[in-house]
Amino acid sequence: MFKRLFIAIILLGMIVGGIVWFKFFRDEMIAQFLSGMTPAPVPVTATTVEPVTWQPGIDAVGTSLSAQGVDLAIESGGLVREIRFKANDEIAKDQVLLQIDDDSERASLSAAQAALTVAEAEANRARTLSERGVGAASTVESTVAQVASARAQVAQVQTSLDAKKLSAPFAGVIGIPRVEVGQYVTPGAIYATLQDLSRMRVDFSVPEQQIANLIMGGAVTVASEVGGYSAEGRITGIEPRVDPNSRLISVRAEVQNPNGQLVPGQFLRVRIQLPQEDGVIAVPQTAVSSSLYGDSIYVIRQGDTADELKVEQVFVTLGRRSGTRIEVIKGLASGDRIVTSGQNRLTSGAKVRIDDSVTLDDKTGN
Image 1 (spheres, rainbow, N blue to C red):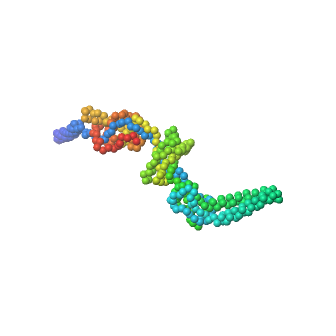
Image 2: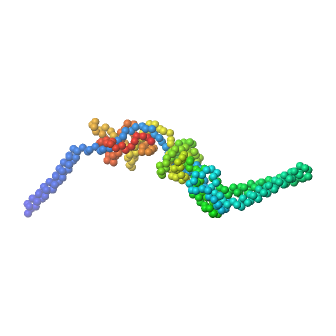
Image 3: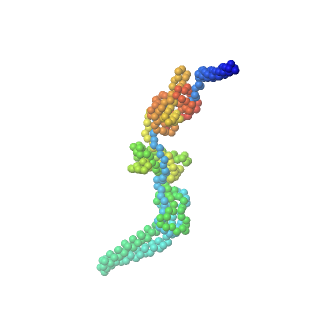
């Protein structure tokens, strides 16, 4: 019995030992096989770093305003007798737009003019009698005062009459009428809006850190996301104080709008053009990889052989952005060849193969 148990234990040990030996043998063979394999180079696109002419600028968002724009209001109440414009009409300066019923004022003007005529006749008669020595000087003075009073009355009634006829203060495009013929209106009621669309203002704000870069007459470019509108203009106003709540400073620019594409109230993207800078290192934004450790770029280096290329992960300090490019302040030098796409499969020291069959970015600095 003991002999059989001993033989069984020996056989079990031989089986377990064989299994363990086979596992170690298999792992060693796999390691030897993998060590003999060379990974294929990773295909990437690349570009050479070159100094460019950089066009810096300040980006902001703004709102369009007409250079001249007002809400037209009723000066004197009454019934609307005539509306002499339609929506979106081109209006000339001093063109009559609205007529309020003025029959009462016309009657008052006729009475005032008649009273003036009588006063002037009495003044002439008193002056003649005084010259002949049969009239008192006080009578002449009294009649002259009556003439002056009558003339003032005529002027007052004429002013009331003119207030019934509403004219355009400047040329522009008028909006939708807000009153109807026969409607009773009160003083101060808005009856239309008038906008001069030939020149437009753009109001926007920039951070207080950019105050030093703001100058009167500085060039700006504005663009609308609707209709592809784009125009250039000049800064015409800089607020002399910073908003203590937002830490922004308000700026106003003026642009031309010959075709009337831009209308008041539109959202605009604004860029203030700053002086050009030469010799700036800028790379495509696709070349930059960001992580918790910082921003990095893969730089292509020569490998162990003449045909071999490897990459080195270089951490860089980034600066300003413009279009599809970003400024590199520290970490790269002119002449470095960098990876612009394919970084997701790379590690530092990996072998690469350059495939520039697809161009991802231009080499301008704008």
